[in-house]
Image (tube, rainbow, N blue to C red; front, side):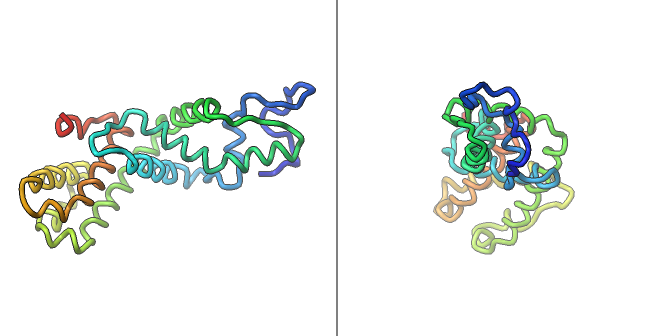
Length: 202
């Protein structure tokens, strides 16, 4: 982040040079902030990471905000250092990060391009699952799919089969796949406002 020019919020600082509310614009100027082309992909990856940390029965509520919090957290020290080099004190406490996360999540969820990026990444995830040999030994249900079928449809069908396997000795081999499918469907739910997991959670 360049400190040769005024940083966001600096123009309205008081004499004590303390910035109580760091604007989101400051994070967007960080060197590690993704460019416009990579922004959607980065946010979807953060959503996947946030979803992966949740329990299997957790829903998608708040997932976008948690992803935004992770994204902001990776640049927190860089932003604070940039202000510090201009003798500005900032306090990026949890409440400030929460506010920024809500603002960023709201911005990201309004981007039409985020939906396209989400589905292209989910389609790639389907292909990755198909190419992963150990899972395919359990059942042919994971080996074939109609290329015209949506990633959501494929994952839902696979999830139904995985849940069927819960009653068999083969389930232990697909627990990892089960978690991955739930992780991905939770992201789809958050982005598209669907509820793929509601019936299963019930």
